[in-house]
Length: 342
Image (tube, rainbow, N blue to C red):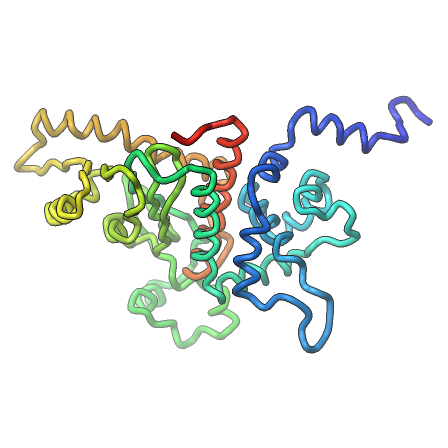
C-alpha cells in the first residue's frame, strides 16, 4: 500500500468534514424538511402510476434536493452530477446508502408538479410556519423593494416583439419554437441599464431580515405596482420603509388610515427641489432601507437572481424556491449562532 493510503480513508475524511463543519448539516439540524414535504404530499399524488414503473422519489428527498439546487445555483444536469460526486450532498439528501440518485429529468418534472399544483404558496406558508415556531416573528417594521431577475435574452424580430407586447404569439411560430420562447419576460431600463426578464418584489422584516412576502412579475412592471400586494399586516411594528419610487400622496394617506407609519422617501421635482428637512428625512430612511438590501445580497451569494426557465409560471416557482431556500438558510444560521428572538 502506497504512502498516504488508508483502509479508513472515507471515515477519516468524514471525521475531518465534521470537525470543519458542513454547512448543510447546520440546515439539517435546524430545519424540519419533513414538514415541508408533508405540504407537498398533501397536494400532489405521488407514487406508482397505474401503468407501473419505478416508484416516485420521496417528497422529502426532492424538497431537500431542490433547496440544494437553489443554494448552489445548479442546473438540473449539474445537480445530478454533484449529488453523485459530493458526499455532503448525498448525506444531506439521505441518499448515502442508495445505489441511485434522481436524474436531471426528475428535477424538472418535480418543478413542473409544483407549478401545475400551484404549490409555491403552500411551501412559503410552511417555511413561514417554521419561522414562527422558532420565535422569529415579523417585527421592527417592513422594507419593500424590488430587484431584477434576469432571463435568457430572446432574439425576436421587431414585428414579433410588437405582437408579444399585445399578448399575441406570432402565427408563424411552430409549437416547437413556441416551447423555447419566453413570451412573458420583458425589457426594462433602470439607472441607464437595460434588463430582460422578471422582477422580484419583496417585503423584508427590519428586525430579522427574512423575506416575508414576495411577488414575481415581468420586468417592465413598475416597482410601485406591487406595493400593496407585498404589504405584510402581520408585522408587529407599523413602520413601512420604501424608496422614492413608491412615493404617492394617496398611498401615504391610505397607509396612515390603516395605522401604518409610512417612511417612504421623498422625490424632488425640477421646479420643486427637496428641502433640507426632506433630504435629512431621506437619509434617515436610507439607513433603515439598507437592511432590505441584505436578502438581495444573500440571494446574489447563492448564485444570483437568474433563471434557466421559460415563462412567468416557471419563474414564480424558481424564484419562490430561491426565496424559500434563503429564508431556511438564514433561519438555520441564526439558530446555530444561538440567536434568541426578543
